[in-house]
Image 1 (tube, rainbow, N blue to C red):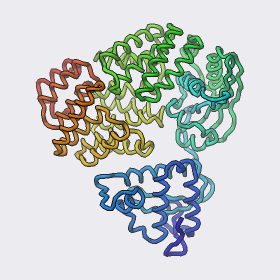
Image 2: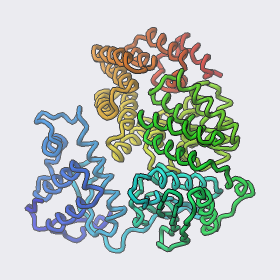
Image 3: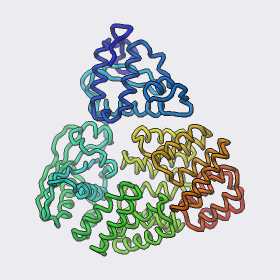
Image 4: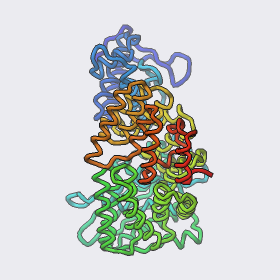
Length: 603
């Protein structure tokens, strides 16, 4: 770390006060940089480490005025000397990531550090601040509102390899707790990202706004299971309740019920008569339970391989216990997601999803999962909008804390119908329940876009990139909203990055073709049509993908022909015809209005 500077000391400000604060030496600042970069938040981010070191070194050397995008791109990110930041946004993207990482560091592991390094928004020149002791106040929680985060239970089974069991037990407990009135429960998708942070109570409280934290461990043998759990106050660190359960393996369901009841007692929650009736559940046999845990474990990966394995495990679970509603609902969701992600044709996936969802609902009419599974099919693929809405509302009434119900209701039902503000409200609730879920945050950006608030949507998608630069949907969604804003060069760069991360997916290729056409690159847009045609020889490609490229080319007749074929096939993208701004150029076409009538999207 370079320590030379044009001045003996660097003057910093105390917090946000305008008066000059204490003076820091370059050695103090360099020591703080080393401390920050040694933290696990940074140790795997080599490029961010280089970025922070370079910007601090240049500032201490008196070269802060030279910290421009072009220089940073060349010196830090190994771009060529002719690097043009207007085409390649790497510096801006990584600067947002660095700001987010620094914020996360000073919120949690570095909350007691006296020297604070800040990278101001919209600039690359770092500033250095001091803050006194003690650390900043913890988050203020909503008065009278009980809340809990259940962290992934540690897997202490000899030899490991059973994470699906410990994770599944945690997820089951979370789902059980969401049924309790007046208790905000952080969803599994977010909780699963807190693995290993059991000691960081203050950071979790600050990040998730929860008053209590449940953590524990699971040790499993062929015929027994030992579960240890502790309920901790996130502000004081006091143990509110602790227990160890050592039971035969088939009694794992009773352990979940007892833990839920103990938490209710410890938090002094009052159950309604309906809640008392709902907590006891029919328990599947142990083989079915294990297979359902594995099915969810694979489905949560949201990959082609993961979803296919999920189908296989849920089918095996049904063979083990045909009366398990959860197994049928899980199978329905796996098939629906295969069709939703364009990994299987609706003609093949939807009948299987429908049959499984209907069977799940038949077995347990009050199951939130079963109602949501069938609602998803009824709306997206069958266009039975009234029936779908009733199913969604039944699911939410049965389990108001079920984040998937809120998310799918907002994004996949209310948004296509043009009920944008209602959609935004539901997705915000889902986001509050599952604040670290990438897919729900992406859905919140989508909801803002459908409301016409493009700047807010763009900000959400940029936050996604900061949180996970490897999440391809962040870039594909950002590319779409940039295109709607007329920023075609940036949109193309974002979509190209989405393609690098997600592969040659039809929806990415079609979006690229559309934007290239709008940007005047017609030959390149036609090349994307050729790519889609070639891809269709080896895998299923939706007709709507071709329609979108022709729409960008201004070839409305061809676009409508493909949309008619997509409607005939009941492809998922056609539900966006009524409200998605992409289709605005077609709204005056009689053929387009007939499509809306057929899908049930006209009054």
